[in-house]
Every structure is written in structure tokens, then in C-alpha cells.
Image (spheres, rainbow, N blue to C red):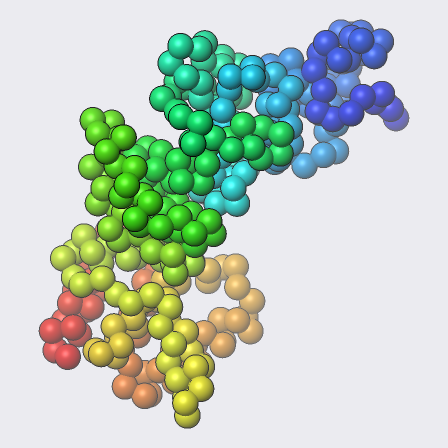
Length: 297
């Protein structure tokens, strides 16, 4: 049983200063006691390999000029833009520097250069990080549309970033790749969006030329708000629900959802359930049904 005389994470230089030889360090790695997080940065293998640990590792090796940005910054701000599959093998940490500085070049770190002002920067956990507003703008340009919309929704919901604030910054992004997408998404991003599949469903509806739905609509029973609908057209009594949780929810939760949908249908609502496969395959059947219901109503 090894005893690691170092805090985690630690650098190779710190290990050397503590009397740990390169041979000992290699043995620790071989035996699974220590793992490498970044180039020349290591941690106790019993610690969970998450972005918090990697951010602590990044703090050991980044220069004072480096700024945590993009999806790593979003994660630090509590807006998770990583897919479940990505978190099994963690993506590189994303940092940037001003154009007159040398970008960070390390394994496990994606370094970029970017024009930033003092107003674009804040501190999180001892690191210099782009602000929620700046991070939202960068991701609105840089991610694919569905993920970019989810990021904008998240920052509006969790950090009170407003549409007016986002619009006011657009002139700074003139000519930047992705700014056309950003400009379009700002107009449909919404602070009430919650479920992970909701932005994708909403975007598909809007891209099909249908009117945008109302978010988080409450259906009342005897004057009491009882059923909350993620996406709804109350005047047409049409609800659209994204269902990507069939293998994750408990049988009790699935039964509860089925009972809620049955009640809605029995009381004159059309409930359109959209699955992950519908969105992945580009199926238009549910959109055709939605268009037909709106026209009929």
C-alpha cells in the first residue's frame, strides 16, 4: 500500500521536491495508485476524474495570462454543455489568452487566442474565467445550433443573462465565425427552458416554420396548477413533450407520466411525445402531426 506524500493534484516538480524519484512515480502510475491528468500533472487515482479535479490541475500549470473559456468555463459556472458520453473520457480543458500572448500548449488542454476585455473576466475557484455573459456568447457562436441554444438557455436561467445584454454585445462579434447563428439563437433562447431535450425539440419546431410554443405552461385542475407542460400551445390545447428518459426513470415515474398524459388527453389535450430517436433520425412525423393539430384547431 503506497502512501503518497503529496496533495492532489501535484506536478512532477512538486514530487521531486518531496523526494519522489521518477522511478517511484512510474511505479505509482503502473500500479494504478496515481494517474496523469495533464502533461507533468498527476493525482491520487482514488479521486474522481472530473472537471473539478482537472481544473485544479490546470491551475498548477497555466500561466497568469491564461483564461478558462468556452465549455470548461460554462461548467465552472454551473452550465453543463458536455454529453454523458464525453464525460466518460473527459474532453480537453479549454483556455485562451490574448492575441499578444503565447497560447497554452499542453496535453489535455485546448489553447486558443481571443480578444477579451476586463469586463469579460471574472474569478472562479482561483482561476481567471470568462464571465457568464461572455461564455454564453462564445458558445452561441462555437457550438452546433442545438447545443448553442441549450447553453444560451442555461445562462439565461441560471445567471440572469438577458436577451438585451446578449444583443448589446453582438456588435463586438461582427465578422466572427458563428455570429449569424448567435444572432438567430438569441431571439429564441429562453430562461424558462429546463429539460435537456427541450432546446432540441423547440429548435426543430421553429426550423419547421411552426410558431414557437409557450414554455412551462401550467394546466389547472379545479383552479389549482396541477400539470406543468414543457412546451405547449394552450389556445390549441396541444402539448409537446420530449421523452428521452425511458431507460433512466423508475417504473413509478413512467407510470406517473403515463397517467398525466392520459388525463390530459381525456380532457381535450393532444399530447405529442417526441423521443430521442425521433430527433436523431430527423423524423418529421411528429412535426407533421403538430402542424396538422395547429391547423385543425
